[in-house]
Amino acid sequence: MVTLSVDNTRCQGHARCLAFAPEVFDFDDEGYAFVPEDKQIWDELPEDVKQAVANCPERAIVVSESSPS
Image (cartoon, rainbow, N blue to C red):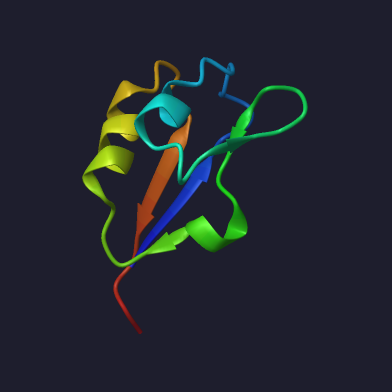
């Protein structure tokens, strides 16, 4: 299982994540990225999300992997 989130202390609002995976990332009223609750947990990350992670200049997208219980 993979959990996806955005570290809001690092995000600078460049919107590269939105360019790569608009169906996963959203932006708050101040222009900072977040992952809506229904998009936070994955069995495996899609390729477009992996590209968003790789292209975030602040490395604000956090990917946490855990083994199933």
